Image 1 (cartoon, one colour):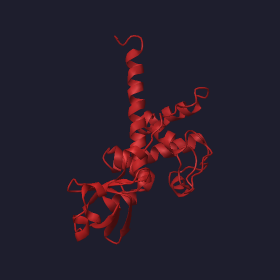
Image 2 (image 1 turned 135 degrees about the vertical axis):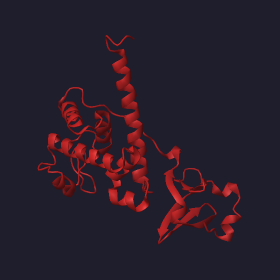
Image 3 (image 1 turned 135 degrees about the horizontal axis):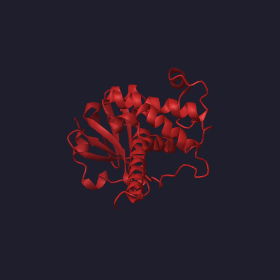
Length: 225
């Protein structure tokens, strides 16, 4: 990493952001964490803006860019509509068909559409699992808004990504959000705020749902508890 001389002289206080300002942590491969108020990728270098100064670092030296925890609010994961078992049944069928955990499928749907089968994102992803039209066509999904077809296609895509990344959940989710090309380009979770938050939120939702499901199973009659 090549630091500007002025940056080397920055006292620790200047690494703090002003109250109320949005900030991120740039995590270097050396283990150092820089508290930045802005950054820009220029060719093979990141230009990092600190309060009171700036620093340029090689993109190869950057391990991750993470939002500051205080600015990340992950709400309690919403549950599938209790009055309509349709989605739960479709998820269970797709989970069995493709060997993907039903709680993972559910957690992805929560993050992607919150169970709105007509949802459309600003990137034109559509339906419960927010499939792009080109991805849907490749997966054989003819009606992208049909819950059964959308869940089937999205689950199949998750299975393919899990196989591609040898079961690495973080990379699988990153590829689902940002595309396999971005993961391949960086060799890790891409340093996009949206993708970092997406992976973090789904992993938290998934862990909570698994814990809840395990507890429900252990409390069921005949389990010996």
